[in-house]
Image (cartoon, rainbow, N blue to C red; front, side, top):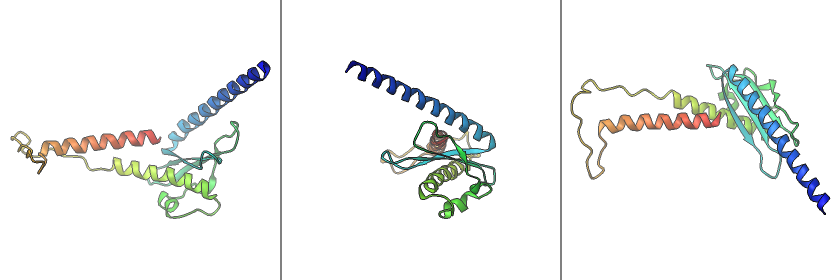
Length: 172
């Protein structure tokens, strides 16, 4: 019984070290993908079935520069290029399934593409300009909640942009 428990602990430790090694390689590859342009990761699948991870890198015109997938059952699975998507526009990827991709893999790439589109929309938000009479006193907000003073509007936009930037960073 003791031998069985020792073997179990050794196997569990090896599995943990192997998983760490795979995650380290995965994130190092994502860092390399960032050199090609904006990038995002998508995932599809469930806890009971294999998962598919997809990484997209796009240029300034939202064309896919690099696409890679991670699928497999073991910790030895690595990111592999998906040349089928190179040069494709994000809008084309989002418009419907791409022939040659499994539904699960398409779903993962679609999730990554949606994250990139959402990030771009957040960064393209118009900047708030200071009004010409910035030195003039601003009206106070009504206590009944009937309105918002101009000072607060600018602060809300800045806070919203900051929140969108944080959520975009968490995707990448």
